[in-house]
Length: 113
Length: 111
Image 1 (spheres, each protein chain N blue to C red):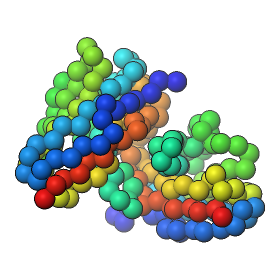
Image 2: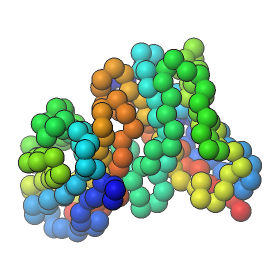
Image 3: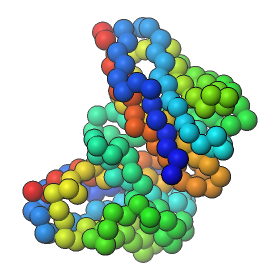
Image 4: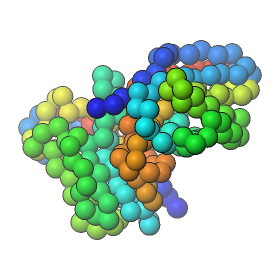
């Protein structure tokens, strides 16, 4: 298994632009999580899905952030419009159960200038 | 909400020595704990887990200890190697809620 695959690895964009981050979970995992990591706030859960359905989006910072999971093998996290304070590493993780160890992707480092 | 915290933000250990990374958690009802290792430029990687009905669990060169009386979790790494240099996170879960991560401890192995 190739693990959780995220793309792109790095993204540099200008303030105000739309950014789309992508994730392919491990096949058979029913749970998918989006995390954001910064030096100041550490790892923050943004949203998670169970069987493609969003379960908890309480961590999504504001309406500029949206996430979708159109099928079991693909999810996107979109930021529109992006702002410099969105600069962070965004991780996707998947799991067989929510009460279980998650497998993380390698992350997308987003820089908004 | 409840949070997971760490006693030491940084730790330096001589190669070959044992290291102990500590974690304090605040939710006494948490029933599952995990240690993750994060190397530079990579995502967190699962190391070892322990359920609240246990007080010790061993893996390869790693041991996790759980003291529910004082709500303390520790990760012991035996015979440290340069590849152990990383940031280590503890995480807790209560019931069917999602994992809550601590702030992390940076472990540096000195050759």
